[in-house]
Amino acid sequence: MSRRIAVILNPAAGGGRAPRRFEALRGRLEALGHVSVLCTHDPGHAAALAREADATDVISVGGDGTLHEVVTGLMGRDDRPRLGLLPLGTGNSFGRDLDLTTPDRCLDAIARGETRAVDVVRAEHDDGVLYSINLFSIGFTAEAGELTNRRFKGLGAAGYILAVLITLARLKHPSFRVRLDDGEWDARPCALLSFSNSQYTGGDMRMAPAADPTDGRVDVIRVGALGRPRFLATFPKIFAGTHVSAPHIEATTAQAVELDLASPVDVMIDGEVVRVRPTRLEVLPGAVEVLA
Image 1 (cartoon, rainbow, N blue to C red):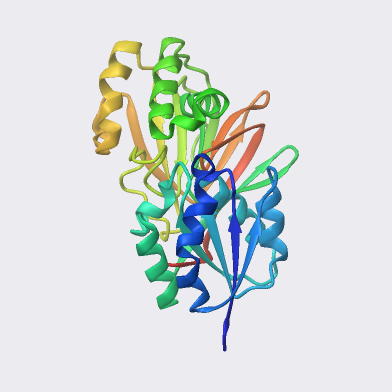
Image 2 (tube, rainbow, N blue to C red; image 1 turned 45 degrees about the vertical axis):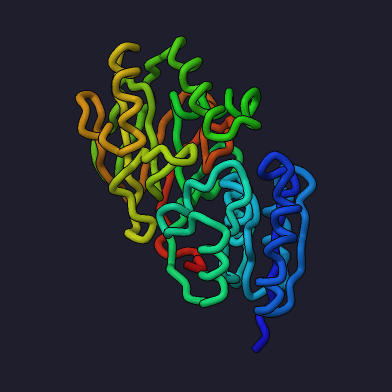
């Protein structure tokens, strides 16, 4: 049976270069079946397009933010088209775990048609539900992400590093009351909490080096109340993933997480930042079939 391929393209991705780059690759998809190109117009549109697409395969063309919306749309369907990636945006954090690091590799995977069942994290908050395929993080990373999106988005990974340095200058240690699975509540002050489905964030920062998006669990990275000098000394280790062995940094895993926060906070979810009061995270094992 001929494949019906819905391409969900974010025209703003990659500094506006994604549409031109996609046209150079389009022929390889058209050789596989009928291709419909659906362009996004505003935030949330990619989710709506993915939810309604008449397709056997839905291809996310853009960065991590576009992929986040496409996954959200797929989770709203009774059926689940296969998910493909074409990394033409600023960041491609999730794709690194599946060796989907270049357009050529992604197109090869789409052509083969083989899939891997990948977990999705369901995040409940006061006003509804969010879905994450990469990471859900509060504290320092969310503050730096909000600053990146507001001021430095066009600089790519370098913009995130610049935002990290600015956020470091006003480093805080809030208390996030959290419980992993059926454990004890923990309200110790910390710089950040990250619940990672895959290893990378911000492009090539290896936030959770042991994360596996197919194991039915999130990797929980807790950075304690580090002072600025120690935080600055530890930060470069995140690129190799060796930061998790530093003092005041804890790494564990969970299938479910409960949060008891007094008010809404900035949350980084798959590279995008929203302000909500999260209450529960739950891993949905193998919820999406990724062409990989």
